[in-house]
Image (tube, rainbow, N blue to C red; front, side, top):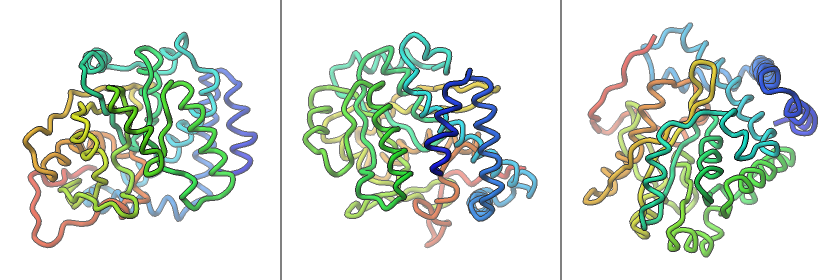
Length: 306
């Protein structure tokens, strides 16, 4: 995020009608990618490691799509001050809301989880505006090294998101009392599962995308400690529009840690295989993924894509 983008470009676009605003945001993402060839090479490299049969042309197309989508996701953030229950349906359509309402009716707490995939904050906001408050567990941005502009942007994002979700925004590893209050009271907590494990966490290693994924055990610990339901959701761009999808509940009763984490991650892997260009983590793949080694076998080999 540049100072120009944070202070001028995206705030200005947020005042325009949706269609031209997102077209201009996409154009900005295109030019940003053109000026950052190393980032584009990192995206291509990540895609190639997971999909070695993908053609050079397809790799380039998918790599070019990611920064454009991320520019639209950034524009989402700057439009949050103008969003409410009356206009959220204009922003996106959410499928599976009945699954969410059914889970909310259960007496147990609910962990609503997603990943760094597409424009992920919008479906959770839509669910909160229609069905009640959702707490959120986020990275403690004060403990991460970043530029002043990036920190200002993330503060704005979390404050705007928290207002619309209607619950507490809980910094991971810091606000343990707020986390206890949210889940012990039978509330709903939204979590992102593909963030790299924090210092002190021992990641759980599972077969993932033809290699070995390393995922924070946090969601698993919380689900077991509070007997919480696990409900995955995703955003995805499809047919020129943003869609939200709430998936079927994930059951982990009776499973060991590895099997439980595989069950939790399985919906994410499916989304990545279907639309790899919408996953944010390609340039940071090594933070959570390694090539297959040490004789570990997986059930599903990587499918070749062209």
